[in-house]
Image (cartoon, rainbow, N blue to C red; front, top):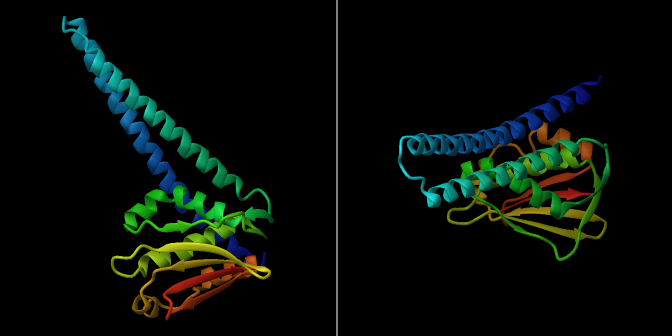
Length: 216
């Protein structure tokens, strides 16, 4: 295994671990809420056995709460399954806008922790590229993290996908030029490694306050 191949393998595992850890935390929250509701139900049944009347309204509320969490848990697991299967094939034709929309939801907890929910301006129609879905998500996440860390005061980060000639461009806009200037080298060695694998170009436009990711 070459040094680059080993570094890519390490980066892939690191990225998968970061996202999976966040997803598993969400699943634990779902189970905790279901467990809490189950405990309340047991308390109600215990009180009923001692002669207290059962409240149909409270039972209905608990049932709805449990159903919501089951639905939420199912959605989270489906997202994790889709994320995991993104590593199945080395290259495929992907809808870039759909990938960004999906991943922003998948990483919703991590994004919320940063307090900078991005605005995604989806194109009118599919903008496709032949690439590796898993490492594209990796690079999008790296750029989005930089963008959220460099967002201008009182301005949400926006993500714009468009097509220019034979390339697909992803723009992360609404960033502070000063923050971009003080953000260190871009791309980092890790980001450059993934970008080289995908054949993409990464650039920063300090005047416009943008990070650009250009796919061939």
